[in-house]
Image (tube, rainbow, N blue to C red; front, top):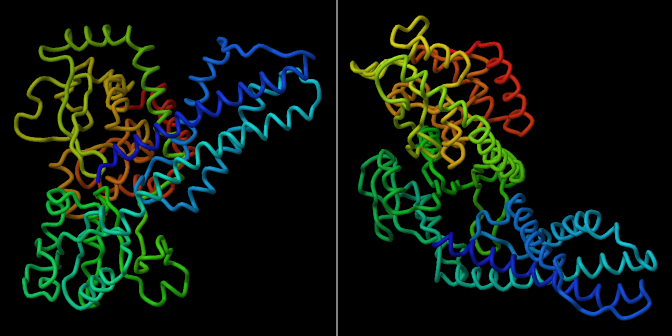
Length: 471
C-alpha cells in the first residue's frame, strides 16, 4: 500500500482544517469579541496578524501531530482511538495557543476569554476530526472488504499454520492480511498450507522473501516441535521494519498479554518495535536535525582548517567514506575526515589499535578530540544516523560478531549513532572479542532508551572530548 500518499491525505486535511479553524476564529473575534470590548463595530480586515497566524498555527499543529506519532502506522488506525487522540491533542494545543497568543488581549469581561477558548477548541477539534473520520472510515472499509491489505507471510506450513490461515480467511470482514505465501523452518515442500498459498522458501530465505515481496506483516505459526528455532526467527525479523505477530497460547490470553487490535481478526500477540515513547522518538529526531544543522554551520570555518591539516599530514583524499550497516540492516555511506594513510586496509579490513602506525600524526590528534567524526553530522541530518545510538559496523565484522553473538542484530532496530553508551563505557574495540564485550552496553542502551539516557551519554561524550580521551 502507498503509505506516502495516505500520509499526504492526512497532512493536507490537518493543515487546511487548522487554517480554516484559525480563519473562522479570527472572524469570530472581529465580529463578536472586539465590538464588546470597544463598544462599536470593528471592520473585518485581514491584517498581518491574520496572515501570520495562517502560517504559524497550522505549522504548530503539524508539529504537534508529528510529535505524538499521528502519522505513523497510517493504515492501522482505530476510529475510537483517533477520536480520543484528536480531542486530547486539540485540548492541549488550544491551551498552549490560548496562553501564548490570546491571554494578553484586553477584553471587556473574563467571560470573553472562556468564549474564545471554547470557540477555538470546538473549531479546531471538529474541523480536524471529521475529515480524519472520513479518510479513516473509507480506509477501514477497503481493508475489511479486502480491497486493500498488508502483504503478509506465515512462518510455518502445517497444522497450526493451516488452522490460523483458515480462521483468518473465514472472517466475513478482513483484519487486513493479504497472504502472499508462507515460509517453513526447513526446505521440506510437503506442507499442508501449500494447497492454499505459495511456498516461498525456508527461514534462511526470510530476508530475501520479505524484501522481494514487499512484506509488511509476518505471522509466526510454527509447531511445538519447532520452537527451538523461534529465537533465530525473531532475531532475523527484528532487523526488518515489519509487523511481527505470533499465535498466543491460553496462558498469554489469561494473563492479558494479548492486546486485541481489531474486532474482526484472530487474537495474536504483536511483538512491538517501539523502544521509547513515540513523542520521545520524534523529539529525538528533531534534536538530531537541529543540532546537526547548528554544528555544520558553527564548525564550518574549522572544516577548512581540518581539511588543510589532513592534506598536509599525508597524500590522499580529505574525506574517508565507506559502507556501514544502519537501521533495519540498510547499508549507507558514512563520512569521516581521513585519519590514516592511504591504502591502510590494503590487506583487508582491520580495526585500529593502540599505537597503530597506520594513523597519521594529525589523524591521532583528530581521533583524540573526535574531530574526524564531524562529517557524520551530515549522516545524522539526512537520517542515516542519530546523535546517540550503537556505532555502525561494516558487514564484514557483523558477520563475524553474529557467529558468536546472534543477538547483535537487535542493534539494527535503531539508527546508529555518532556516540553510544558502549563507546562511553567501553571505548573503541580492537578486535571482534572486544566488540562482543562492548555489545552488552549497547543492548542495555536499547532496553533503556529515553531522552534522559541520550542526554546523559552526550554529556559523558563531551567530557571525553574535552579531556582528549578519544582514540
